[in-house]
Length: 173
Image (cartoon, rainbow, N blue to C red; front, side, top):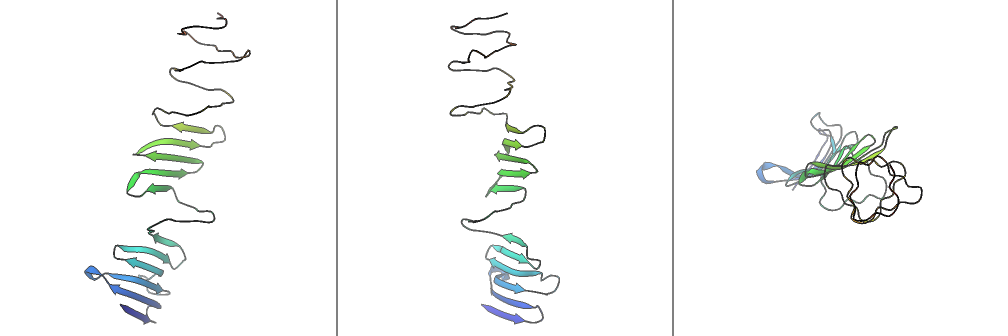
C-alpha cells in the first residue's frame, strides 16, 4: 500500500498496485493538473467505481447492493435493468415508457389536448373492472365472455350485426 501526499498534485493518494499495474484505492485531488480533475475517486479491481469531479458532480457510481433514498431522486432519461439494457423505463418530457425485451409495452403521455395510456400491439389482460367516463373507442371486435349489461338509458348504435344465443330487450331499426 502506498500513501502519497504531494503538494505538486494538490492532494492525497492512497493506493495499492493491482494486477497489470493498475492502482486501486482512494485519491483526493484538488487543483491538480488538467488530467487530475477528480476531487474524490475510488477504484476497485474492476476499475472506477465512484468519482466526484472538481465541480461536485458524480461522474461514475457503481453500487453493489441496494440504493436507499430517503428523499427525492432524480434520474436522466433511462433506468436500465442491469445486464439487460433492452429492459428499461424511459423518461421523456411528459412521457414515460416501460420496455421489456426491446418492446415498448406501456407508454403514458400527457399533452394539453389528450392524455394517453398506450399498450404495445400485444394482448392486454386486466383482472377486475375497468371504469371509463367518456367515449371508449374500439378498432376491431369486442369479444365478451359473459353479459354486456346496460341500463335504461344505454344506447348502442352503429352496429351492423349481432351474434347472440339469446336477446332480452328490443331491437330497433
